[in-house]
Length: 493
Image 1 (tube, rainbow, N blue to C red):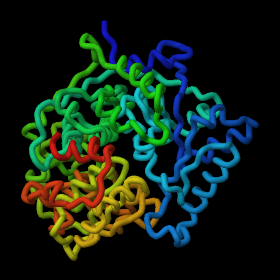
Image 2: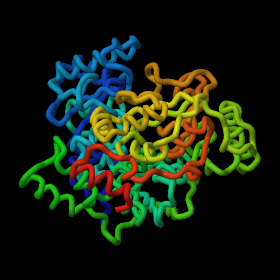
Image 3: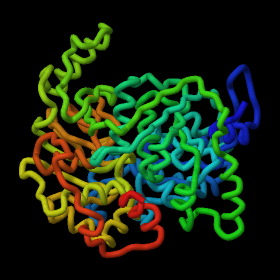
Image 4: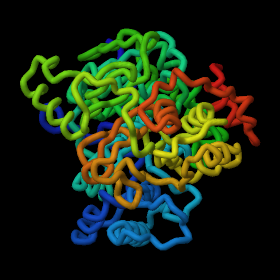
């Protein structure tokens, strides 16, 4: 029987086994940030241990990082202290640190792929649930807890229960204005937040093959919201192209040798899965959430559901609570609902290709005066590239607030948040109660739906807006990497 890409990487990294399903795996890359690491570092100190492989461990400030002018002091004391602690721990344990002022600072799941820290065939861990994002490049990437993080620091290995295999196939061609974000939201809508529990979701199919590397990151990122342990896509030439020439990627003879290994990681035709799901994206419309988990989702042209539509009593109660919290009425049209804010950012949708899509919709248009609209690039490298392209001028002329990188409103650990009862359309991954601030009402959507909403001041269907062509954006700069990995896919190449 053939093996999947996940099984091949897993088998290559197993060091030991205990019991029926517990395996000790070697860790090739450990990423850490300021929120989940302090206790792990203190445990190392208390036990007199050191980090086993500091050269394979990278510390990145992202969750607490303010997105305003970095010449200003960090106002939030808790954020300030957590960032100071990470700086001290990185220094004491000899780790590479991308701190608040680093030109490579950004959200950990954006920084890893764009710097070549994430490559196919490796095992990668991070103390963050959305570590599955890195699986888009063909890595076995899992989110871990604090005690597991301490174990990785000390031993460069981790005990994991082997997950089951789930095939998620996307077939067909995306309609105009519909994106991979809409596909993964629809998938979670159909399967529920527990539909992938205990599984690694391998995304396959013609629609996935046509996706750019950055689009694959979006679907792998949100597989966690369907309950998956992690997600993965087999590596191909698009992935190699995305990684080639990045600061930490192999080069020269090492690059050629690495590619020969990566080519062996393809899922074999006779591989088997424990579970399978298929979606034809050809008839898919833009999706938006109405409730308080990502599965509470509808098409942008649909009506908010009636709780009585749900067969299960617990689902009816959950729907009633969600509608009350969100301030929505059963049966109302979701389109046209007034909003207070729009946030385009997060580790789900804050990469360069996402920002270009937004620019194509908002060029020549203005943000509604009733809306606070901000764009927070996923990294300072994304920000610099966007500015060299001239995208920031499009955003500023349209009325968006153009920020520095950070997790921002997705997690609301500093000033970027919604107020009590405020409603926002966010391109992030979670819409739980209080997620973007106490009493905040969050609707998850694609960058295009968020951009259209910003223009109208209410939830809007992006299909009613024409998109400027890449040429009409009059981009001010390009490079071979940009042409291959960003512009060519956006042109449909």
